[in-house]
Length: 106
Image (cartoon, rainbow, N blue to C red; front, side):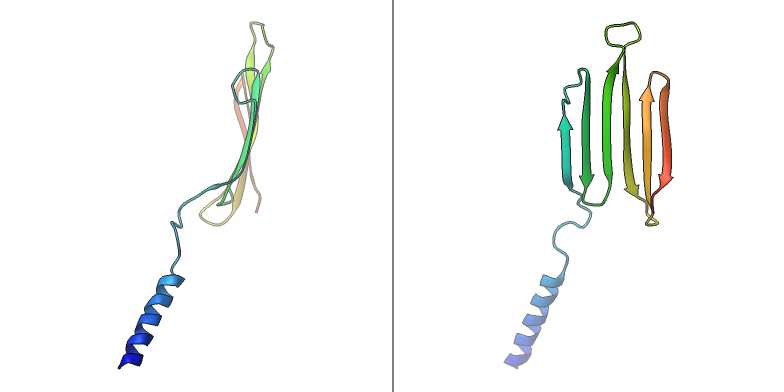
């Protein structure tokens, strides 16, 4: 009888240890870079998440000190869709609007 009880306890412990640890939906930043992010004259940042998503963006102040002064932003981000495909969006945003280009990576 004791052998059966020990076997049951060991089986329960094995199942508990084999269960996923932590929150499977928790996404973390695995790589991050920032430069001059005070918002004056321009900035750059990038990051990569544990789920494979990435983002990179750079802004430059164009025509500084003139009536046409404006920030011009270029960047990209990628993500994995629910069907398993990876998409990448490259974009430029300037005084004329937002200009995206979407491509299927894999």
